[in-house]
Image (cartoon, rainbow, N blue to C red; front, top):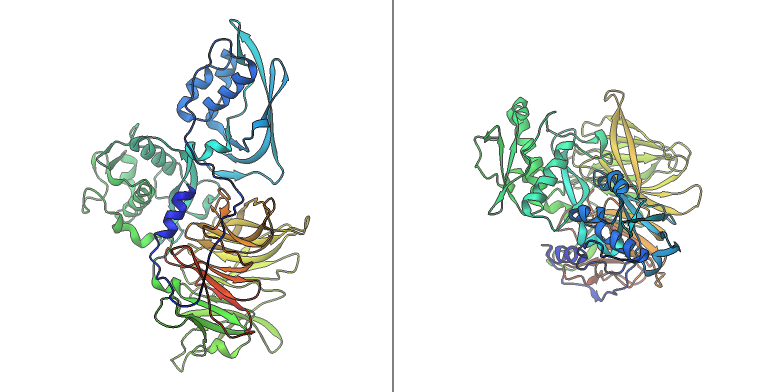
Length: 585
């Protein structure tokens, strides 16, 4: 999977900068390579001793296709009671994880990595959490068999990549204008038809608890598919029952988008029928993926690759990343925001407006205006704030997100819509302090860096914008701590491959702060491929596939990563003031 991630990064379309110092990367990582060939499950042999029997049982239960084989290791009562589909517990597989307690008792003790629930959602284990289970054995016809079984399945870490892979289900924002990915882990090594069937079955169930009611599905109640989704020459036929006939034509198209996007990630073309007739009778029989590209959650568009920044309180535009000119920071004096001293800076996704945190006549405000004020009627508008104000954030609906009172026990979250109206969003951090907020373009998912009131350490979490009281109140909820084994976390940003985090490995020998890449659910932490040798203070990134990751190092210098994974350093004046990088978002 890591190799696939690296290939995706290398295959990006961004133009390689031609100016600046090229730096090589190091290869130290926190996690070892876990890929490899899965172990084929085999039934128990006669006279298998207890320790070997339990090891064989663990190998068999790790493969969803071999649950019947796993039951051959059990007593009849245990086999009847076992429910492997209830959950999967991923543990750190080491040689000393399995030990003999007594002749008929074998114990598994290991560091717990995560639980994958019955929907396939990855739930990271708490730092330091362990797995402990005693397998009790009994003789059946003079052969040892497992008499006590766990809830669900135990999966060793070296079998995770060969057996399970993250896939996205897709649902719509409440405004129905953008798809939101909902990651789940599903078995690999399935036939195309089996994989398509599992994905569509999960899609029809609706969003997982991670997204809750923050998104909508166009699947009507009672919608079902045939027992399987047949795949012929790379074309999957999704045959839905007549429950879908209740949908209006616009909603049928949105349902088609959910299905096509969900199956496109396993490289399948799609036909969708309802009661045997086409779901979209006026469209081609095989629905082109390009027909639904307008719902892309990564927001394609060149404006998202434009880099900005703040230096000595003044907003800047970083020019030359396209190779057309020398790379340099230019004063953004075409904007009326330039006349203010900015503490932080945010740019909207079209890169035509921005917002800063500043002081006006002794009052802390968020000021926003166009980036190129060519019209005499342009003006700077202000939003009054209180206490410490985090850097604002924009979503694709032109909502400007503001979190103030961040240094108090009651932080306040609001967003200003494109009409200038402010909406309060209920939030409770339970005494922890927010340090950073980044909204995804969909305006549903939030990324936060928090400081724990208990430990004083910084951590990264995601959250979802939900509705309550019949839709009358918005709430930031479904907080998910990514439980990363990193210290000294200073920043985080959305990225095309997941989430970038600036932090120091808790376990590795390298104690410099580096950029790490992790899936949005907290799984598969690794160093950003081609991670730099210099220390990392701030990150700039977004979900656009062409955006180059940018790092401000601990000396205040900017570096960005090219598609060949090397790093370019911006040539700057000696003793130049630090430059904090900002991409739209």
